[in-house]
Amino acid sequence: MTTGRYFGTDGIRGKANEAPMTPDTALRVGMAAGAQFRRGDHRHQVVIGKDTRLSGYMIEAAMTAGFASVGVDVFLVGPMPTPAVAMLTRSLRCDIGVMISASHNAYHDNGIKLFGPDGFKLSDDIESAIEARLDGDTSADLAASADIGRVRRIDDGQQGRYIEFAKGTFPAGLTLDGIKIVVDCAHGAAYKVAPTVLWELGAEVVPVGVEPNGFNINQGCGSTDTALMQQTVRDTGAHLGIALDGDADRMLLADETGALVDGDQLMGLIAGYWQRTGQLSGGGIVTTVMSNLGLERYLAALDLTMARTKVGDRYVVEHMRANGFNLGGEQSGHLVMTDHATTGDGLVAALQVLAVIVESGRPASDVCHLFDPLPQVLKNVTFNGGSPLEAAPVKSAIADGEDRLRGIGRVLIRKSGTEPKIRVMAEGEDAGLVEAVVDDIVSAIEAAA
Image (cartoon, rainbow, N blue to C red):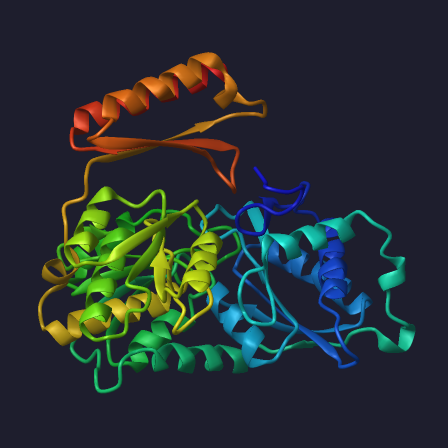
């Protein structure tokens, strides 16, 4: 599902070696993006990072050729978290940054995320301009033979930059000494840097998901499958656990009992702490339509607002920047703190939560569970094209569900921006009613798909 021909809610994504995620597309994206960001007479530069998928080598090589062909010098930094690539784009004064990743998806998918020179994800307008170039005649953009871009691989130095950056976001004067932390890196991009940062800050680290083989990214581990992390916390007697996704831009946490703490609780925790310490800007936070009503009620009790956007951390960030907020995120664990980073950063978010826990001197179960979420049910319906949401029986089922929950809950139906799925969500005070509403809508969509 895409909002344009190539770009969806989080870059370009698809099954590796099938359209649009082919070497040909990657080559042309490199050429188009390189041409789009050429300005002035200086040597133009791009930094390219990736996660640990087998197909990353293929996409990296194709994009490198595309950028070099239009005269852009390429820095290859290998497996790096998405937020590290965004940070390096600014730090290295590059004209553009590229992250090759399908985030939380299985290994057979891959994707391309682009960052501008400011380290922020591209606007819809710039993505549209790049798309317009993709199917056009690119011959006029090719560099002269003497001006072809140079390519340099940098393996360790830039990881060191990100490690020091991440450590610098942890409050001075605090330490993780005496704290045992399970960190699940999903066999993904943070498999080196996340354990290193936590250890260097003083923690006893129990790493899992740190043996990538090209196929096991997000497989039975990470923020989309937290059972391993939760059980490891219980088995090792850790104080808490952290689960990152494949590109480490999202994070979920487990307390010392192994109970999961989602992004809504984490945003509420950081918002309250930043409010007390005078760090919160905008008088509240920005999140998406998926966040629980329980979070909204919790923040209201603190006299804080909660602005909602459509799903996708890029939309959260756009609203934050436009309206002066410095904290936002998604229930899924994308936490964006623009005082520290330009995009979601799972490791930095974990450090902010750890700071609250360390300063309080209380266990994570006391600190991180702030409110009881309203019962919420989310189910996905796979479909193969067409417009099942336009079918009369589906519209009727949705309208009926909205009527049944009116005043005591809500219904949210949306197409995924990254997969061929329709997501059906409802929440309310009556768990049984919420489940029934979702099941009725799902059944109607399945019948129409």
